[in-house]
Amino acid sequence: MDLLQILFLAVIQGAAELLPVSSSAHVIVAEKLMGLDPTTPQMTLLLVMLHTGTMFAVIVHFWSTWRSTYFGSLSAFRTNARYVVTATVATGIVGLLLLQLIKYGAAKSAPDFEIEHLFGNARLMAASLAAAGVLIIASSRLDRNVQKDLSVRSAIWIGAVQGLCLPFRGFSRSGATISTGLVLGVARQRAEEFSFALAVVLTPAVIIKEAYRLYKSNVAISAVNTGGFSQLAAPSLLGMVFSFFAGLIALRLLSRWLEQGRWHFFGAYCLLASLVVLWVG
Image (tube, rainbow, N blue to C red; front, side, top):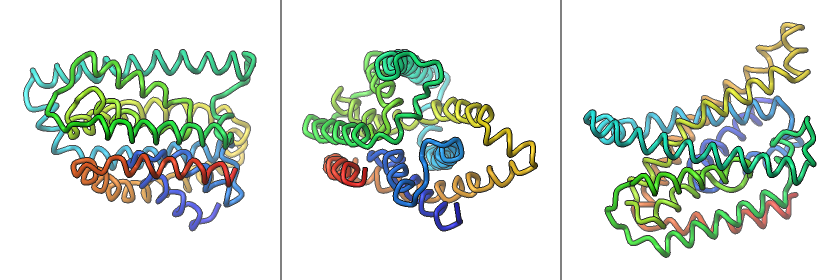
């Protein structure tokens, strides 16, 4: 994998991850077009490190707002921490249950099955993109731009929907969670802030999981034994830097379009992208 390929994937990831259009689907399609296998441990590590870059972009972009909203007072911190924990627990329950159902139904409980085996399924990605597009468009129709705050109930719903996104590359996490908040009447800015707060909590767990998967792989063991692990990790670290800067630009666009009532444009794009994925796949 050369520098140009890394830069290309990082820009796609940085822009698409923080826009509600599913970065994973875009990156996987780009990998296929470049002749790369998205299911390999190396590519999975790159994808995770690109996610890490965008996570830092989220922190930088939202820090001033979170500092006043989440850390403005002890009471505010306790309230928002309860919402984040509640939503994350709901994500874990739904995500783990769904993973077991997929493993039982699609893989016949095969002990070596991993959810990454689904990453190359173009039909599944296209269906997930289309579902996200419909949800985004529907939420924009139901959005009345009220100033309603979060509640435990809305946090549970948002977290549960986030859990549905975990196994399916194409079902945009940010698109689904923000849309759920809008459907529940949560204010646009509040729904956006909470969605990305959940992302910051969730991303480290994903990184640890994928790092362990790479560690167990023969590729990682061989790289360590031959002293070539730096060659395996260097492209991912470089991609993380590129995705960070692309993510900052994407977040500014998302915030502007959400506040201007252009949320449905992202849904229309997801529907179009689902057709492209089917064509490429």
